[in-house]
Image (cartoon, rainbow, N blue to C red):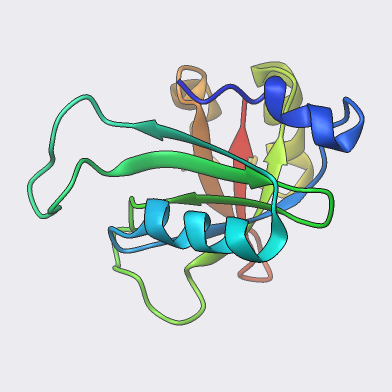
Length: 139
C-alpha cells in the first residue's frame, strides 16, 4: 500500500502539489531513473496479480519525493490511451473525501453526469476541468 504519510518527511510534514505522469507499463523504471536524477524516496503500490496487456504487474501508484520535486505516476493509462497531452496531470493529496468533494465542486464538477458519491471508495480519481487540465485527486 502506498504510504503517503511517510512521504511528507522530506517536505517538513506538509503535502505539496506535484506532477502526475502516466506511463505505459514502465512507471517503476521511469521513477527509478528520476530518483538517480533528483534523489529522494521511492514508493510503489502495485496490483496483487498481473493484468492482461501488461508484461509485469502494473504500478497503480508510484511516488518519488525529493527535496526538489515530487513526481507521482501510474502504469494505468486513460481509456483513450497515452497520447501527447494526456499523460501529465496536477496531483493533489486531499486529507479526506469531504475535502476532495469540495475541491471537485470548486473546479466546476457539480454537473449531473458526475456522481461524486461513487468515488468515495477510490484512492485516486481523475477529473478534467473546463481548461482541459487533468487533476488527480488522492485521499
